[in-house]
Amino acid sequence: MPSDRHLRDEELMLLIDGEVSAAVSAAWLAHLRDCSSCRLHHQALTSALRHFLDGYQDSVTPSPPPEAALLRRRMAVQAHPSRRSIYMVPAAALFLLLAAGLWWGLPSRSFAGALPDSRLTPGYARALSKAEVCGITADDDTRAVPVELARRVFREYRIDRPRPRAYEMDYLISPALGGADDVRNLWPQPYNEGVWNSRVKDALEDHLREQVCDGSLELARVQSELARDWIAAYKSHFHTGEPLAAHRRFVKDLPWE
Image 1: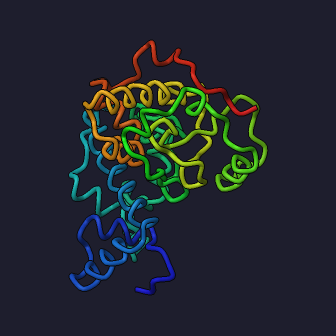
Image 2: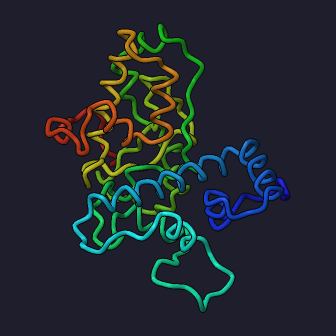
C-alpha cells in the first residue's frame, strides 16, 4: 500500500479478524511496523474489541452474546449493505460507542475523554535515568503546561472553547515519570467528571513513581503502561475494577482555567 496514507478502520478490523489474503496481511503488517500512528490505532481497536466482548459477561442484558467470530465479521464494513444485520456496525462507530459506554446497556467502563486519542497523544518521554526521575521535585511534577502548548492541544482535540475547570491539560506520561512537554504527550482530560478522571490518574502516577523509585518497577515498563492504557494500568496495580474512594477525592494538579 502507499506509505503516505494511513490504514482505515475498516482495513484494521479486517486485519484483526484475519479476513485478508496473506499478501495483503503482510503488506499491512509491514505498514504497522513503520507507522506508529496506525500501529497505536490498531492496538486501540484490538483493545476496544476485547473490552466489548469481555463486557458481555458483566452486562445485565439477558440476551446471549453473539459468537466472537461472528461479531468480528459483522463489525467489518461489508461490500453488500443489503445483508447487514443489527450487528453490522462500522468499526469507527463501534469504537466511539465503546468509548462512551453506550453499547446496549453495557456498564460504562470509562468516561468519554478519559483515554486520549492515541493518534494525537501516543505518549512521549524524555531520555532520563531512574536516578534523574527520582530526583524530580514536587514543583517540577505539578508545573503548569505552557499556555500556547495547551491551546495547541485543545485545537488538536477540536475543543474551541474549553469550559473553565472542566479539564486538566494532562500529561499522558507525567513529568515525574519522565514525560515530556510535547503535544504528543498531552491531552485535555476531564478534571472531575466521570469515573476515570484526572484525580484518579494523578493518584496512580504518584503510586507508580513510588514503585519505580523503590525499585519495585522498571521506569520503561511504567511509561509504556501509561502510554498504552492508564485505566488498565490502574486496575492492574490496584487490583480493582473501579477507582478507590480515596483516589476519587485525590487532588494534586489544578484544572485548566
